[in-house]
Amino acid sequence: MKFADFVLAESVQASLAAEDKDGVIREMVQSLLDAGGIEEEELESIIKAIMKREELGSTGIGRGVAVPHTKHPSVDRLVGTVGVSHDGVDFQSLDGEKVHLFFLLISPPDRPGDHLRALENISRQLRDDTFCRFLKQSKTADDIRQLLEEADNNQFGS
Image: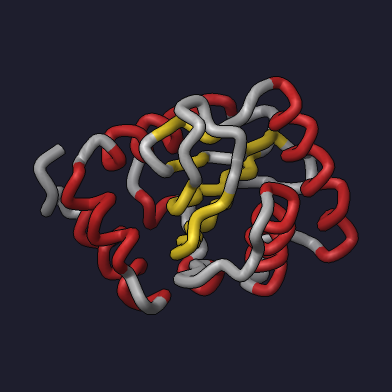
């Protein structure tokens, strides 16, 4: 699975304004709404579902990365977005470090395979230090979209 299969290009955020976990999740889900990836009446329900998942354990996986995600019946296909926080956010990460790179996923409950393939793709790309460094240095949404496209075309080492 490639980023192009699930990341809504119009939802990508090169400079997240939020300064805490709740704010980042709200800002990213709002970007999916603005890009047409989710329905307005489902916004709060999706945010709640992601926060409930966070209560099970932080999706801040370390090395400045978090992958907040949930399964939600309102989506009929996997949708996701990417956000960068230049200052970093305390996301209660496993390593205690602030998070700079966010990949948010929402998938239909009856498509667990898509959800897992997207998570595998994200984790594979994030093992590439060059990809992570370039992503953190992105100044615009276009920069991020180009990086995701390059990753999809295997232009990084992973």
